[in-house]
Image 1 (cartoon, rainbow, N blue to C red):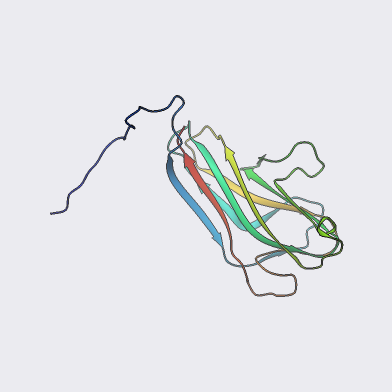
Image 2 (cartoon, rainbow, N blue to C red; image 1 turned 30 degrees about the horizontal axis):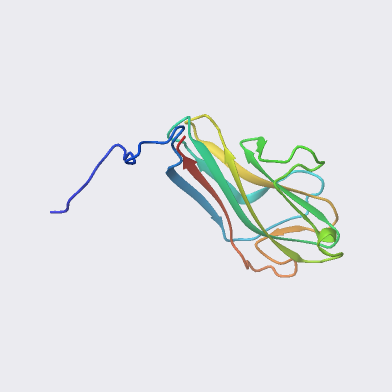
Length: 172
């Protein structure tokens, strides 16, 4: 017969710190292994497969969203990424024109860099204050005439990378 230990919670010897919490309640992840290419220009566009839904167990929980992506662009183009909870941008800058969590500018990396691969990692802590299903997604905005690519170089149609979006429910 196997032994089982079941508890409602474990409190450290020194007690729970003031404003305690911080434990991981659940983790949900979407892994994008296929490619995404879009020529949409000067408009915010959803990146297919870069969506994750989580149903928080507690309305006081925070949700840590981690995004890891491999993207490439054409020469002399600006690409911006942003995260949304539903239709509301979160974790975006507020002082600029494009207001995202990541930006890739081919000119900023030393001039014209056609087919540049950018590895993007972002972590944003959100407070949705709900126990309802909550969806997070990544969008991009770009200028220029070339396409934006996820998980591949601009010259290669085969998937070469994988991208992830992970939601961690963190107790308050």
